Image (cartoon, rainbow, N blue to C red):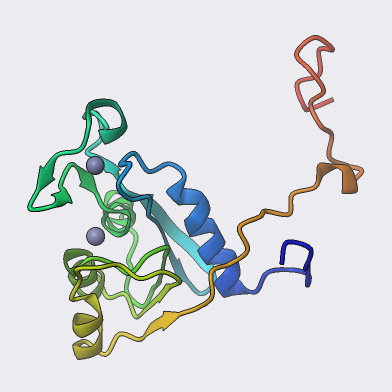
Length: 174
Ligand SMILES: [Zn+2]
Ligand SMILES: [Zn+2]
């Protein structure tokens, strides 16, 4: 599988892979989720599940469990929508690429924010998202998980330079 390299990722793979990358910043050990909001093949915002800005992270102080869910974090989809809210970006007609099936509340928020399509590769227990998307006529597409490797090979591109070490004085711009 890892040997297969069929060229550039298509758009779906590109944005879902970005969502996977974004999820690396998640701060709750129970779930790492990433979301990328896209319109016309342009990224509007990204989000991962993490604490309210300035407040302690689950990774540092433990989860805050209520009815078997951690409630400390703002979910990835909500954080992406909130970033749009902070910067005055309309999400009408956007596509949400999410690593996991949204929870019920995030599904409702995405629908309410005018998101027109949701793309995922992984399911999630305990959610009414699919029913809400169906009743709102928001298409939900499940696609195969994109490759887990990122093909970023500095050695293949002569104009890119690897930073060799701290000691040789190269800061990457040489
Ligand atoms: Zn947590
Ligand atoms: Zn959620």
